[in-house]
Length: 366
Image (cartoon, rainbow, N blue to C red; front, side, top):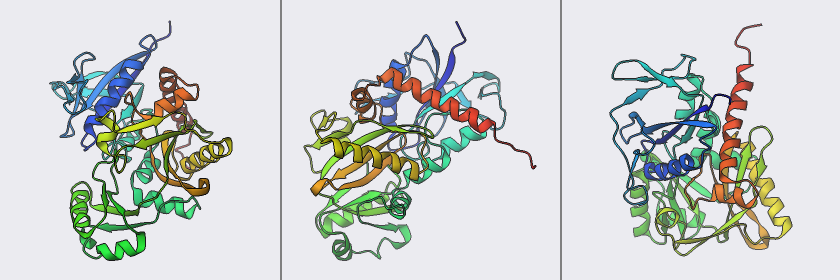
């Protein structure tokens, strides 16, 4: 039998989405084919330290989304850039602890989904799953994402942007005139609905801004779109494919963090969504176009609003979508005929293929 591929699962991270990363990592680790892959668990704690973890001991309260934690490990490691031998280094003695053939980043939010980890892995010359530096960065920043989509003619909701130095320049009444009421206030660079508020009046507006600015230095104000919430998964590099769409039917005012990960009754996921063939085709086509416009690779989940007369509006894209047991990305592929283990296999092969392609690029001046 050929040597197994050593897959480094990189999870946790310095993000408000740390716990969701732990849940996603657990599901990926459970589903990987152990006959084909050796797994290297690299947990990043909330201080940003990388630690090697044991397979059976890396999580505490792993079945409770509200209490789940990364188990402490004394083996702190680093990944030196430019070595070319894919070795992690143990900081206790400076010795290598073995190579990693490919990394699967399961890091949601800042310092994991925004191009930072992707840049480090490229410097270290290690293949990795998912979008590269550019695609990760532009997809993570909702402001930049929406401007690129708008320039490409892809419909998105109306929005305004403010930052720390200008937050008092946009008042509630001005925002309401431009965007209508209610409106949403959200951090520009965060996911999992963390820091998002639905605003109906001025008191809620001020509280929402304070909440959003506690997570990011840039905040998005966005119109509330009245429509069905539809999601579509994309898979591939140069020639991506789209899954059947699914629908999220929320039982709260919007699809909040609690509804996504904690309250099993917070939302109903309809997979596949009940849509006519033409609408399915249009959603799949726009999902792939969004993926390409934003320079994504590997995987992404594109979220839409489906309005009157089946008008399609792109809400956002997630380049490292959730992989928990109730997450849409793998569920949509299962409904489309690709099982969870096969999906992971394809993602790893896409990472290796892209790395081989990039290695052939010349670094010499001709």
